[in-house]
Length: 345
Ligand code: DOR
Ligand code: ZN
Image 1 (spheres, protein in one colour):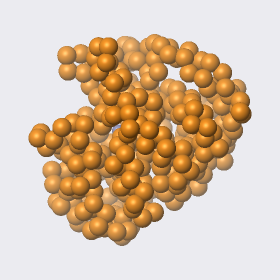
Image 2: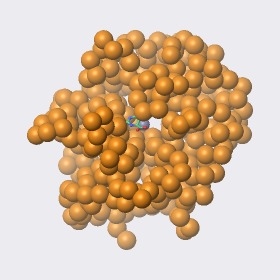
Image 3: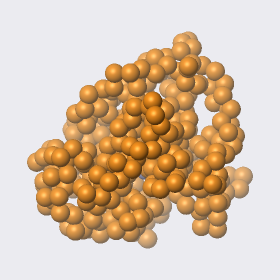
């Protein structure tokens, strides 16, 4: 059993940085571990144009500590009114790497999201023609649909139609949480892939609801039954190029999580790589870790892999129960727990 593993420097293909003081506080955690990250645009107000994205990118770049190399890859928040020309120009100018489809009101800061997918068909047509990747938060918002069924229902109501109507469109089904999503992605062509978070590989819904409500294990899509967690672990460690790393690290201050109406989101950035590595080790699949973390994402996005490498070693580390952030505190993923891998050096 190997006690160290060296892989190419990984990237995070789904991440929330927020803005202002919180952004400046969280960027170093990601820049320490990852070469690039797909940055989510659900700010208030959302990042809906190339001009807004370029400004946001520059604010992030200014927050990268001296001596660290990190490139933010920007996304366009799609609305019913997205201008296909602005999106295509932003892409050809190197500002936009992808566009993000939030069904309106599906999650945090998604009120301006898309009310009906057919309204953005002209945008999707342009994205298909120009090779812009579509990142999808795949949950229906219909109040009649149980929160645990919202991802599977999204596949049937929307995703099958998108993939059928735009057969060449590059689609990332983000932060998948179900066996249904794994099967769907596996059955699609090579232009459809998925990201998987560390939390959905580690926990099922009991971790959120048993022994008292556990707000730091609450994110959207919510963790599902154990059978789904096992399907995700199998997919992530399978070596299939369709599955890659995306933390969905979503910082909310402690008080905003431990509240009568707690925010959805898990702050996975600080120990992300250690968390994923633990899963691959448990599955006896360390030999597949580099593909998932560092190779499959660049291949899907048509980007070069990173040249640098990172070494992880088997060693117990105690994850702090909380971290200081923006004059307040935040609980990191695995906060207060011990995990079995650390970054060497
Ligand atoms: O848990 C989540 N938090 N899921 C999302 O889709 C959004 C994110 C956030 O921005 O806080
Ligand atoms: Zn997200």
